[in-house]
Image 1 (tube, rainbow, N blue to C red):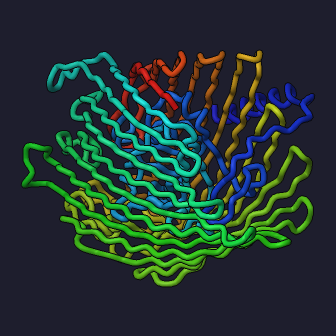
Image 2: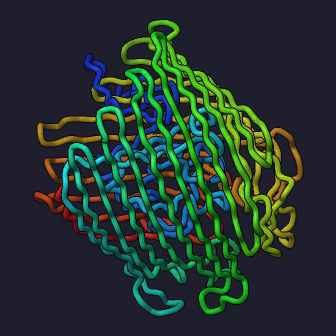
Length: 621
């Protein structure tokens, strides 16, 4: 069956090419990829960058960041809580600690544990696009971007108005173990935007609640988000954001199954960012930024009825400051910058710790020849625990024709262990390791990009070596899990994705998206095989496919995902959304996991089976 993946994909892509061979006009969506210092049109990118735009997000059967990213090629979302609850995210076979998430360029790093990194108050309606950069990205985004980075770019409103939406859903099954009630979920969201010539403001709030999909999996989630942009003049702009999330949920089977059947958890996150852009001259820009993040994590092993035993409370603060700049020259563009980050934690079973990180960036982009584009740079890092380290990288592309480009890159990056990795004392379940070394990655990649009027195709091969790979292991089940530098992990990977658009008429369109990823990971040295908590469940094969049809304001999207993990059964998940807009109202119906597949992503508990929901949205901007 595995050999057939390549055959099927090759035939599909070949068929797409044969249908578009007569097209001679190149039509590329010139999205500008923002990398904090250098901004590059996606058609000129030398890296493997995947963009999910707002039009695609609107059609997908999901209301949260976690659900949207399920359909991203090469991205592995391992959910615990359903429908945007707790989820781990990784790229191309890395661990969930090896991917950095950014909001408008500001890093969202949880120094306690990356389990909480996606605890963000972002309604999908405010997202302009999601930029997924694959491969080591230290010279662009700094620490923890070991296997990639995900930058969420929000919209800048151009009109004023408001939004009100509500939804409800169920699997129509009953909680036979506890209340006897039918499982359900629902929520309401409200927002308002002010879009003026010189200033734009938006505020959104939402409330979601569910009694879950099986015993003790219910949740209640409250979010608020404010964003503001002020253009002082043509040369100076200020941007600010503030967000808060209060997320409480049943944690049955999340960390210590089957003993944690009654466990609950509350995660509260606050973040604030203020940044500005200043054009000093026509060729010189500076961009300062200050950001703050607070996270409170309250885990109750015995549930809400016994708060005196088995309770873990973690208070984490981080504050960061950055100054980035870019200068255009006759032959290219220079980017440079510096950052400072302070992280501290006060925890019942991790203790009190703090550390500082200082980073310096330097980049240069130029055309060595008319069709040969080169980006090179480095990131120099000092950490109070791990001292000085340097991470260089180089990207290049060559335009063989106006439609076909070859890309290649070599990059390095680092991941500093979290406070949980280092200091956790949660016997007999889990213990940290203060002697851990930081993870380091070296990756090389070669691929091509093909663009015609109706067809977009990317194919890439990469080789990656992660030294001092960290995983939670144990040799026998009677021992606690402990974080270890288990060895050097070698990964060979292939990823392909294609998009084909058909204009059936002036009012009707058909759009195909297909992606495939293959990963082969193994440790360099042979050794006794331990039980592994996270590596063992990484993806080997992944297929993502969406087909959507649009006629005027009516849309139908069918989404299919196939995952085969290193161990465990493979599974197909099929979802769809139908929506109809009438003036400012939109009604939608979602069906997720249509065929009621039983599947697992983390641990030994199943994720939701078939689930139906319907909603109504009013938008006046």
